[in-house]
Image (tube, rainbow, N blue to C red):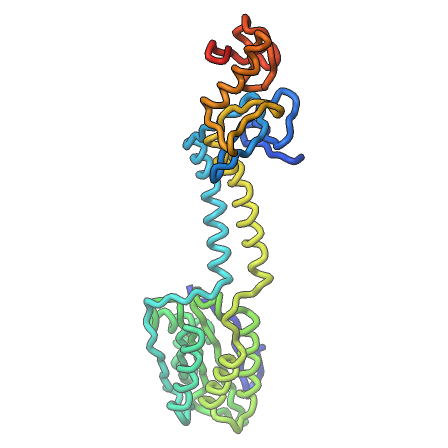
Length: 330
């Protein structure tokens, strides 16, 4: 709905830890901790070791992405917040400038149209000017008439309408009590911010207070003034809150959706430190198991591939971490 941000009159008065934890409680660290197991991943052929708690599962479950539904309302709110402060100008609307001088107060319509064209070229907002006699207001206030006239003239929210009204017959005192009002569409708010419209209203009122100036020229100069002073950049302070909220939501979602654990999805158990686990920098799973067998068989022991502890070959469960072992590690 179009709305007004000011009006006025003249003649008769004025208006005036080094590690991380997954969302499932899994602890991951570069350093060994109580109850941890050692794992290895490879990047460009280089092994990268880390320790994880017993409930660590390197497989990523796509169902965790369903948690993202929780963030949709917050993202919609953030998007609307950005839209309200960033001057995004719609293109698919009527750009025709309306100048209707029913009160015969515009001496140079071409001068006014040039000023309105310059304003529209810079801002994307289409300005229009209508002048009427008081008896054409249909018994309405100047603001009510401007609102109705806006809806009659335009079917979008990207126009800025100025309506000027004056009496058709002067009073006996010779004082001309003239009024004016402006009405702008909702989609103009990111561009015509309160500060800009306030400056325009004050400047136009100061020019209209000079009875020696032509009304059309005063309106044209007011649009020239706002065109030269308006900025197309968004208000930085207004952007601070949606930017903070977006950063917080993305940070929170990164961990809640398990995206921070994707780099571990190809991890495999690795022997503890002190066991040679590389040949020219790379060992596959088979080579790691062979290395474990060579060391443990000499002591009639086997090594747990999960926690790295040694125990008797006769046992099928690691006494250190309770993990079940198979004969292939004996």
